[in-house]
View (spheres, rainbow, N blue to C red):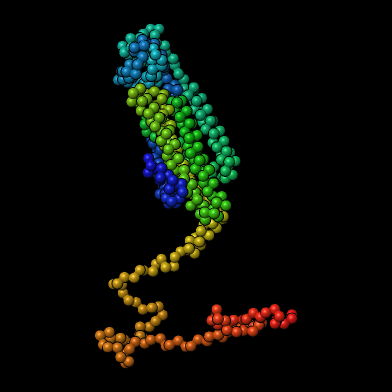
Length: 420
């Protein structure tokens, strides 16, 4: 845990950095492939809409308290699925209260309806007035879907207005909406792949993840805005992309911690509702929220900031700042960084601008005499000393000073000084 804390401090202070905004091609490709795969799954496999959306038959079974258990519900579901009735191939059986079970199937014929009643009687012992039957029309599910779509549209409009009013940047609104579409598409694709029925609980979970994904993205964008103000960029001398990448690194640990805290309880609910409770409304809600939150953390770190930097890179001010940053980097470059260090076995090369033919050949095995002595530089000419300056005239007598050991202006008494 201490190592993770130190890593978070290093990321926040900029001592360590993970590049999240550059190398756009590979990460864009990953997001596009995930969204394309999700859309393909929905088109090829389709969504398994529940009885609330397609219409069907619901049986409310009153049983003894000892029979209103998950084991009884699992046994009843298996018996109905194995009965060979096509409309009841994937029934939904849940516990409603301490003394009731709910069975949902597609629309049944009279013969299939009687067969289902007989199976319920064989498994639970309930018959007659203990079983109430209700026909569910698809209109209720259509109303739920229409209201959900209306809610999503209103939510997206409010999101655009909020981000534009808070950040004063429409490009942040576009990046946030793209991230939301990314999260919704992948969540629906995984939901279709799982085969879970689409129920009002699943729609509720899908609406809930929109808020979580937007919240995580807004936190990252708020730090990006703080790091990319004109004063902050002049102080740190970062480009817009570097400042945005620092913001993502500074919020990385917070995003991971928030995701872990949120996903652990939802994962526990998903496990309990799927493994121990069987098919229930809890698993529909938990699956959509679990997948949506996990994908929302990914999009807020890898997709939304990168898309924002990509759109901002075309602005004139951002381009000028990048040019100034490159000029500063060239000015601060070490001119001797590419000079190789001396080694004993390195080859001896001529100095630039000299001709090797003009140099005398020196035989190091022969004694050095005047005939083959190497050429040396001529002696330096005597330099002028005391020239080039005018000594100012002395304002008083000059005499030898015993203290200084040289001539110094002597100070006369006041009586011997001339009147001024």
